Image (cartoon, rainbow, N blue to C red; front, side, top):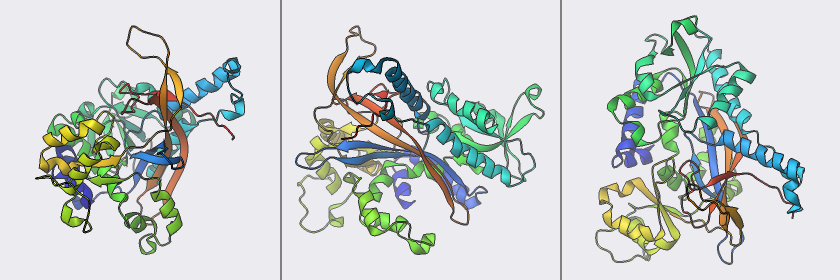
Length: 438
């Protein structure tokens, strides 16, 4: 976690989370387990004179969204094919070419596994529930409710939804057992509180969600409890862009995947590690100093610049700069990079990474309708589609056992001229897969 500690020195949001978690860790965490509902995002990479390959965009560890809506979108497209066959516009439109997407039940399986693992411990009160921490005036509720309904229908697990503001008044920890409890109206339950087995964060990944110190205090209260967190603060920070950049450095993957002494067995062999590394794009920190590089490195003579910022200026047309943020709309692209670097204080460079842009294939077109404008005409444009793969993992006990499963997928399509790719931020639309055998 030294990488996160360094970023935390110049990024107040990351620093507060890191400092709070470190203090709780030093006090002694009562819950060693971490639950992650993850999504790993990929784009096709097609540079000139090179074969097409699949490259990772990012790995998401908190509030991974659109699992429910992607399943609904895939179902919609299968229904339209069954009903209209898309008016025979392509021979590829066959029922067997529309894969089923069971992301909802898959993600819920991870939540249910954490809930059941918590209840095996044998605490005083077994009718525990799962807490969804949500944003005020939640706009993405239709991507969350299906998880709640699935938990009740197929696992008999109840969900309680509250914001940080609400939890500041309702959440408390039993001083003896460290059980997390939420006060509720007595006439709705047999007790005036419910015990929480699992805290599922659909909020808490942006600085504006912590407008006061009490919001951080509430997050740390939840972290201090016996409930299993999805994710814990440590797991949230592990999804940062700086961590992604460090993992691309030589020898780092081997430390985690080929360490027999650490894991008791060799998880990956070197060939598998090399194949994984090939899915990464080039990345580096903006704070990389010249004296940390090999002699003879090709750099420009710019005063008050690190090698990282010099290289970013030189390669700006083919780069994106990323901060340690989730939710979309935070990146700096191409021609905007040099003026951004001009204004970026040197002390803040450590909070950013540079990543080579993925080159999308040419000649992929579709019809899009611009939302919010007067012109409702469908326009044919070059598009690019991003593939997200969902999965869950429950890990962290003393035996080193990891329970994990890949559970579904997401496709987002946008105009090729758009740099950003978020659905909620209005840059792309949900799509689905069509399998073609060629």
